[in-house]
Image (tube, rainbow, N blue to C red; front, side):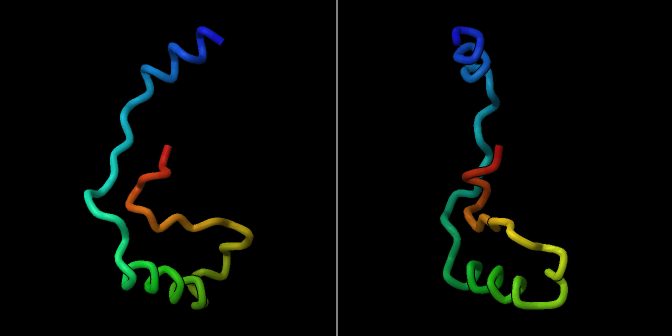
Length: 55
């Protein structure tokens, strides 16, 4: 457990955009998922959060 805590403290800080996604940005992601270009995306969660949940 101590190694895990030590490793977590050394984890690089999250890089994210300054502002949350706008309604238009979220809509663009939804429209993309409805197109043929997203045909290989199945059962995945698409985070439109400016990198907030990126590891």
